[in-house]
Image (cartoon, rainbow, N blue to C red; front, side):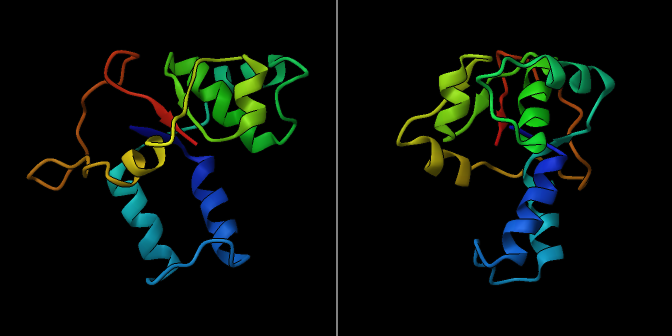
Length: 129
């Protein structure tokens, strides 16, 4: 399971606005997110794809980078966002159980404490929003 690196900023913004309740420091929370997910960087290809998304796709730059990152990586996007799903611009996944499955994602660390180098593919991974 992966996230776009801009999702870290989105989480930090939500926390600073009180839209998510944290019982640990923001920095500790973000480190925990980084430990549980592969964090994909914004690439030049994703930037180009973000600009090419259809008009029906949300205009929010973060949403466009997240969707474009999924496209660039060839991964489906797990999202509850109805506007993104309705745009049909990329393969999305959502069901009532998606939220609980996202919360139960196991740590993506090996015994050595280093991030796994396993390659994400459309067959073994997805991007979460």
